[in-house]
Image (cartoon, rainbow, N blue to C red; front, top):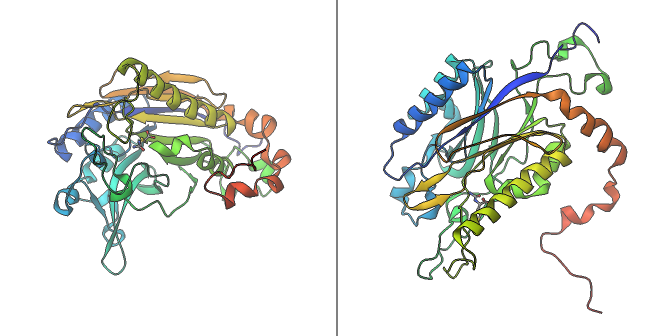
Length: 360
Ligand code: CDT
């Protein structure tokens, strides 16, 4: 061990699970709830809290809205005005996190102001570093579920993300979060051999949003950037319907169990296959009659769930993690630089739909 090698890569992290946010709930009231979770996090020595997808509002893509109604759900992210961390309705959350020296990752509906003054809407999460006092990572949801046009069948459950958001345009950009690990290796330490610097720098973070967690592709792109912690907020319905409106043929309990199974398989499998921790955070409970699944989990790089929510309400789910635990998978089991066979993966890039082999 050299003098610049951190003696410990331990870190206390948390999922800031939120209970329902109803249509009539104000931003201020939701941010107050999030600040209460941050107060608890501070008392438990947490350094990073991950909040859900679209944390500040109800999950509005379940409603058909006109432009005026829609506008109220978006927060303006204007780079010339300091971005989302300075947006008047949200600033308090970031300031509160900084006052506790806690990083936060938070999802919101982003109305992105363009250089010509027009705007583009995204389903976004940002990572705010308390140490840097600014947003150091931003992700715009790539895999938008649902439809542009509402289903017309009576009783159909709407999921209008494709109508309200543009698919993310930033790819899957991993980034480092400063100030979380004492003695993290820096550029100025002059270690130029990647074999020597690997897993010794500031933690490498990636963000996914809800439906993204079901797609191996995004996780792998993060894996290929050495990501150690994936932050993923979600709003997932606790039931399954057909586009025609009727429920899939199973009881409500069976449907919820199935939703939870798929959620856990996705997070546990992909954490293991990319040797990273993941912090997967629900907005849960019943929003204006619409049940959302819980299942907030913090997952270890070996695929184990190390901490899990016990409620469907606001709840802080805390785990102490050791980033060193990523090493075995990254350097031995998978060691992408040794074992990936990229000459066989072309189809993953070139093909969207499945083309079956010819019939026999
Ligand atoms: N919010 C979100 O992405 N929800 C999706 C539901 C998709 S059902 C059309 C999810 O994957 O949980």
